Image 1 (cartoon, rainbow, N blue to C red):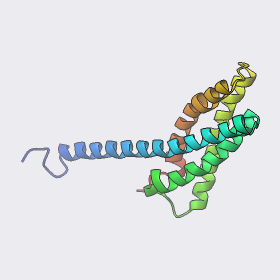
Image 2: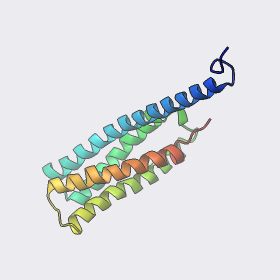
Image 3: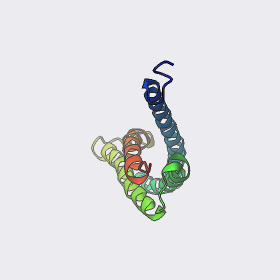
Image 4: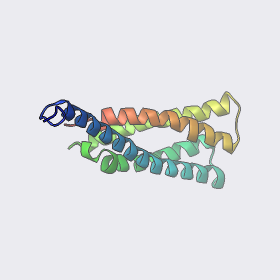
Length: 155
């Protein structure tokens, strides 16, 4: 019998590490699916308000963010981190909402900076600043905080 086959041997540690990597990859992929759905809702609502209903860009972003946060919570609780749900969904929702608002403010701050500091005021500039740059920053923030503070490992 080789060391790889023995109970508690090196092979077991390697298999455990591979399983952990696989689990993390699956978790990131589920996060991206949920985030992708929320992102599509965010961009669609933002552009509907901005381009069709002529709502000012900052208000369009605020409203689209609120709608996207609701989509993201449902996806996170019932899909992305379904195995990390607690028995206290009210606490989860409150933390998720707080962290989502902070993430949305990061996006709004990028939009504000683009419009008021860089003086880029076209719909294309609004979309790039809030839905590309702001979303990239907010996505990293969301993954790290949701994973550790809202849906921590309960094992």
